[in-house]
Structures are given as structure tokens and as C-alpha cells.
Image (cartoon, rainbow, N blue to C red):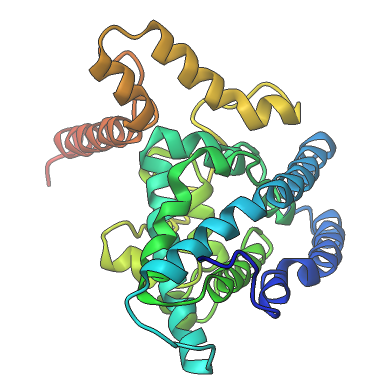
Length: 319
């Protein structure tokens, strides 16, 4: 019979974010002061308040669903794991950290390519500003997506869920610092291996050339391995937000607008195939192409670039 009680140390392992929150606030105040003095960083009152409200909502939603998530995770680990007694040694923690980050890459990539997951993740991209408060603008609705299933291979491998979730917390803590325009570039070796403000500014940009790039959590090498890395171009400043920005700071609308859109599209769609694709197809997909996906937007941009280059070549004076 499965024992639903957690190991005595599990709950302690699951709370690295609780320790980090005061430091988040301190660094936000430092960035705010720096931005005010240098005018390099933009904070907007309503936008920042929305981000902080979303953070509080995320904390509440996480607390309400933690029991379900933990119970399911330990049920999989206890009953179906391949390897026994992996333990909690330093090598196992390192392995778990790397595998969790690899898993995060695919969760994040799927969150931009599958509308069902995008409905939860879109909240994080809804700010038109890029500062440390943006890092706190997180979803309330992850529990309604299949995101949790991505972690099952780690449990099946035999890594205890408490360790996996602890590493996930560390991953999120790492991601806080690079939501800023205060840092231009890090040392070249660091930029080559790790996610940085420069890499993540690209990810948050809605410029067509930057769409769906740089999904990494900690290690940018995943993007380089799987063809989704795009470097920041100083000639193309990042323009933040959604392709179609929201016209509201209402946290409830921010949290639910894409879910509402999905329900409306499925309700009006003709045929089961179209209804399913409105859920699992890429954001922006429609049967008639009346809206544009990120692939379509990027292809349109590339065509304009090629046309402009040909025009420039043709109109250049002969030597």
C-alpha cells in the first residue's frame, strides 16, 4: 500500500523560493533606484503592481495545488521508478539539476508552441517592460495544463520528487536576475554556457526575428543544441510584450485572457479536428490562416528582409 506521507526532509527541500523572496525585493529596489538615476530601466506603476499581484496569486495557486502535485509525483516515484536507492548525494543533486533544466527547456519550448500550455505561460510575457518585476509575473493556471507530465521521466529514473522540485526552485531563482536591462553582456565564456540578460531579452522580445528563441532556464547550451538560439542584435533593439498586447492591467484578465480565447475558438470551430488544433496547435493558428503564428510572422519578416536586400542591390549605382 502506498504511503502518502512525505519524507521528513521533503517539505524543507521544496522551499528555496521562500528564502529568496526577500532578496528579490531588495534587488528590485536596487534596480529601481539605478533605473531612476540612469534612466536606463523603465518601471511603470500599474505594470509593476500587476506583476507583483500575479506573483502573489502564483504563490496562492501553488499552495492550493501542491498536495495534488506531490501526491502524484510520489505515487509515480514509489511505484514505477526504474532504479532504487539513488539517494540524495551531491552527484545525484547535480544530475537532478541538469536533468531538471533540460526538462525545463522542453516545458518552456512547448509552452510557446502548444496553445494549451501557452494559455498559462503567456502571463509571463504580457508585460511591455523588462525589469526584475517581470520575473515575478507568473501564471496561476499551470495546474490546468499537462506540464507536470514532463517531470515524470525524472521520477521514473528514480530521482526523488523532493529533489526534483528543489532543483526546479533553484532554477527559478537563477532566472530572476537576468530579467533586466541593467546588464549588457557577461563575460564571453559565461554567455556561451549560461542564460544571461542578453539571451533572455531576446526571448521576451516580440520582434519577428526574436520570436520563439532562447528557451533555456540555466544552460543556454540546450538552445544551441536544438537550434533555437538567437543572439541579441544591437541593431535590432528588443521590443517587449505580446504580438497583440493586452489593453488591461487587471490581474484576473491577464491570468485568464488566453483561456477565454481558447474556449471561444473551440466553441465556434467547425469539426473535431479544428477544435483539437485550437487547443494543441501553435498560438495564432486558425483553419483559414486569418491570424498569424510565430512561424508565419518570422517568415514574413524574412521575406521583407530579402526583398529589401534585393532592392538595395538593384538600386546601387554601378561602379
